[in-house]
Image (cartoon, rainbow, N blue to C red; front, side, top):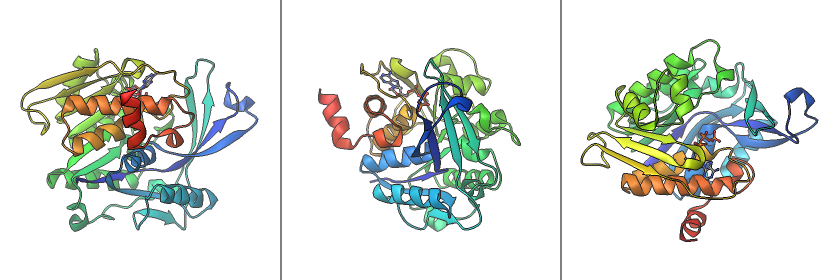
Length: 316
Ligand code: ATP
């Protein structure tokens, strides 16, 4: 079984009790979150061989995240608690049209202090797949840490996947455009929405966006299209195809309760399937099934399905 490493932030999402602007929200529910944490928990529930490198504060919120990750089997030295920094907090507001906005409390927080070289070359050699996210690239030293990890993984012939998750609220010191393109240069597989890629300066429909993206270096582009499913494009360099290939999956028809985290669920499903040798078409169907299942329950991390739940969903 391919051993997988996910690296990046874990944070607390504060979910409002009602829709409307943040200033008018009376109370919030506390939930474990962060895109890499969602991907890691998604992969854990799909029974993969996995480590998660993250860093939280040595505070009550950090304790809650460490416990939540441990409940999923994600423990060990790579789940770091920083004695000198707090945990990142994200307050979410839900617009009337269910669009989300985020207000991040993120200055100097623990996840921004992930250090280059924490995983040395010997440790890195154990992994066949490394997944990272653009949000680790918005601050130093986590930016240097994740770039160093992805560069060495690429050199070691490990598959590197990257999510250019655009969150305009997060970009100050560094530019999203430059960070996303740096990720594209280092990645073999990119999972993105059309909005992420347009934010990064690309134009066109999913097939055009995928080809533009692969011109930067990735051999595989996975583009999610909400309730319309997803699109995958792989050049002949991708290990899961023999020749340039494109696959479309129309998605699954469900009654969605909450689509938060559907993209992270899709990423977990794709990595689980591709890393275990499934074809691109089967992996895309599996990724869509994991994502669609996630939308049928409230929350992001809490709604991520087990492998048995995905299999039951697909046979319905
Ligand atoms: P998020 O930011 O909420 O995590 P995203 O914007 O990154 O999501 P989407 O393209 O909205 O990603 O959704 C990812 C995948 O989730 C889709 O490719 C699809 O398989 C599934 N999905 C999303 N919304 C729905 C829906 N309403 N019905 C069925 N499947 C859905």
